[in-house]
Image 1 (cartoon, rainbow over the protein chains, first blue to last red):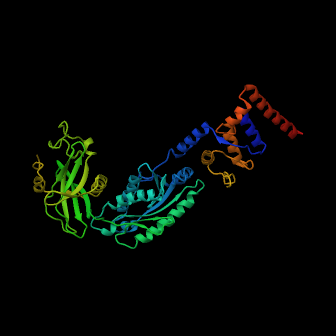
Image 2 (image 1 turned 30 degrees about the horizontal axis):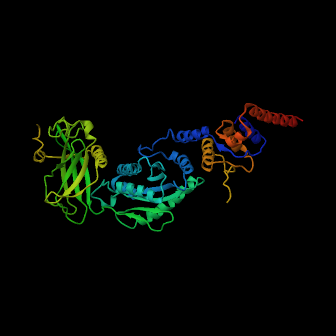
Length: 379
Length: 93
């Protein structure tokens, strides 16, 4: 082996091409280490959700090298619809809130299956790398991100401020593809999607795939979920604080009687939070639900003895709070569940943070509190 | 069908990335064949990879044919050494 190495080195010094060069085990280890090292030490964009723009090209180069016929690399170029309008109507802080929701939706949809980069400092363009994704798989992942964002209703009373995404997708199996060309191609597709999204109000999410004329259009308020949810803190005294949910019927038909359900895996059952008003909810009507929380942030913990672990009967703690899942459940008059929303915990945290920042607590009266049946105010 | 060739005429960018590209290409295609020796930084890179034993031209099949006996290896090293010396002296002249 030593002789062969010397021979090859000598040939190269002599400007002769060595024949039959192959990778050694050390070479394979180096290959793996290089990939790891080149991806190490990356930084996030200012919101701390996606990767910073500086890293996209190097990461794209590495991802392209791994692209194969049976493991294509998908490039997606995303742009949020209507950010300018949100900034104009609700202000730049609201725009930041929308951007963060958008980035979180993308990040959550990708998980560890792909990487997303915010392309320019203050803008809403995002590049997504999806290794081992063909067009269909990539479209599925981007659809999840679109739906996740479209379920965020930051301004329920402003339908034109509903959030959505225009996305362009291209794929490659060639290790010699260039990142800049793929990005430009994906951007071209994104522009096609953007044009389509402008044709409706509220603007839908649209996904365009290279080589396909038809576009995937995802409309807002899909059937079975015609509600908008907002939340903020409420208090009736310094000692009690809770979460107030406002559920607005954004559909065209009255909603049957419904409840807000909270699920906890340890408790193993749903707790329904009543509203002071019952009956069906007419279109555009809003209904408030009040849920008890405490100043230390512990939901239900300790102070309400009936909320205990199903197994050992010990009071719930702050750590348990993280496992609560808020869902909206629609029931008919016979308590038959018609529809259960997906988990809304992520949006809840975001809305509560906004509520704290803006000082827009809902003030609940003592009577309202007492009607909920969690004990008398001041106790 | 034309045998794929690594493009040594591309601009040489980030050295780590180019090293990754070359190793990755070799892994994908199994063997790196050259029409002529590369030049400039590509030449240095290839030389470095072979010198560090990350790439090799050694074949076990060929090795078995020529035997692993130490004297054979020594003879091959001496042969290369002799060629180097001959080349060096001709350059001096």
